[in-house]
Amino acid sequence: MKRAALAGLAVCMVLGSSRLLGQDKEKSVEASKTPETEKAVTPLRVQVVFNEYDGDKKISSLPYTLLMNAEDHYRTSMRMGLRVPIETSSNTGVKQIQYQDVGTNLDGTAQKADADKFSLNLLVEKTSVYVPGSAQKSASIGGNEISNSQPIIQAFRIQGNLLVRDGQTVQSTAATDPVTGHVLKLDVTVNVVK
Image (tube, rainbow, N blue to C red):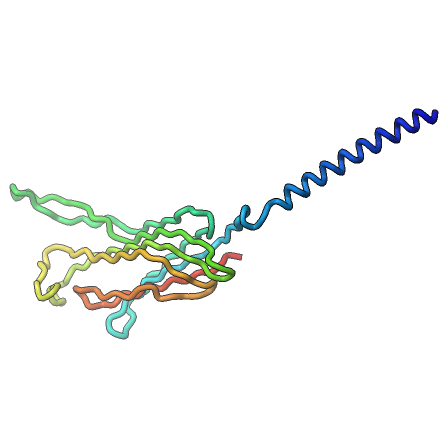
């Protein structure tokens, strides 16, 4: 009887020690995971606003919002626009219609720069149509008049890196339209999604 009790006790000790060894192994695997091997993905709300000014007067404001994750290395993209018909004529004098894409294209990635700053890589493209009316003056660039019979496609494009804190708005660019003289200012705001 003593032998059976001792054998049972030995089996319990062996099983108990193997469980403890398994737990120690799991703990050592978890301890080996460092913050460097596990980068936390931070969800961000990035707002890009095109503000157009005629002198000091704001004449339009077009906001766009992108959701992106810092550290996931995926590009976030947005396309918003329409196709504008433009009349052309061939060498034979036959009128044809071509379509031009007009609107806004946004592409970007985000990386965490430090505790509260993010590095944004943004590519922003905005095109619009300018059609002078009879009451408007003819468009000119550098003193050269442009025909009123066809629409003029205005294009704005910028690619760059911005260092932005959570909750901060930065004016990344200001550019003057050579036809209208309007100033286009690009404001970017970053907020961590909680």
